[in-house]
Length: 76
Image 1 (tube, helix red, strand yellow):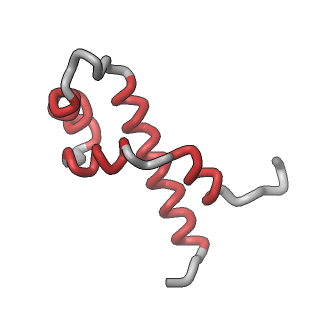
Image 2 (spheres, helix red, strand yellow):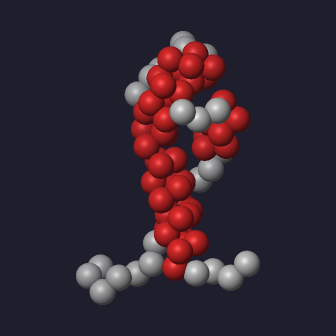
Image 3 (cartoon, helix red, strand yellow):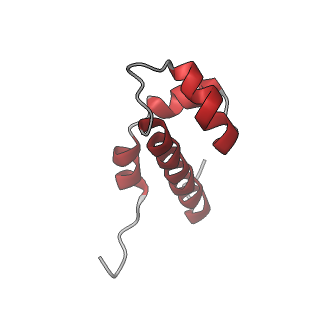
């Protein structure tokens, strides 16, 4: 598969969405609330993702991947 501007943009948008899910997840104290309850009560109604997708997001190094995907611009 060739790396195109479209595939880079898709990956960047996916990682930004992952970041939004992580921000919502981090608003809740997972020391006392199980992940499944956080997913059911807060994540699923807002984002509509499955629990498997939530676990995939939790295991993704989002900031490192964003650095790889972000293209340098003239204004940096």
